[in-house]
Image 1 (cartoon, rainbow, N blue to C red):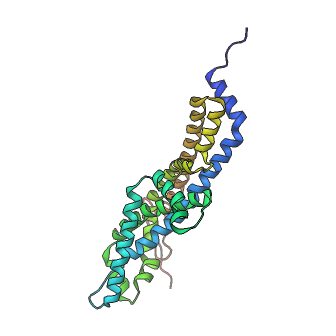
Image 2: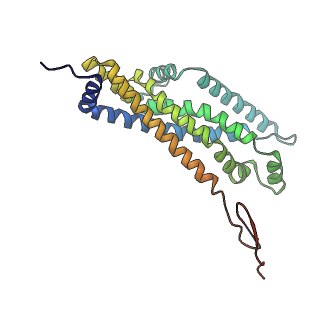
Image 3: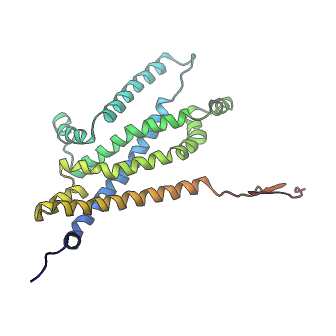
Length: 260
């Protein structure tokens, strides 16, 4: 008399049978998360620069009005996409864009667009906070040597901001890996969509979604570790050498003759 297969044996057999579908869904999920996070970060950087453009008493009225209008538009964009769920945004954009603008978006195009603009709304606030955290003296020093706001941002502020916001950017990336699951409502063949199809074929819902959870966990954990490694690389080594008259280490000072 043959015994019934165990829970783990059933789960293993499901994975062996359907691993191509799991793999395809995982690849789509990662592509959308990576592309959407990168594009959203660029959007956030641009909006952060625009929203921190200073106004001066001698500026023209046109410039002041233009900046005011831009800030209002960008604030509305940020509040709308931060204040509504991505699943609702997916439905509105996928079905609304063809009606309002006559543009038919493909499923993957719509998904990429949704993830990007949603991420951009969050990243813009993260970037704005990073810019405001920079000491005002750096802006004043840059202005005093004739640098424009754009030059100050590119050469002085942004290198510091990007370093400071890296953990928050990584967090957005991890969130996007998980949040792409809501895109199944518009038919995107990501990991959750693939899992629904597999579970519908064999009715082993618990086993299938347990496998799906493990895959998501592996993806997010791997990304987290890679980002922490990147942060450590950016921070640099604990010990360093200043070439010239003095060499510094962690625990001692070694005085060397200066060069003639």
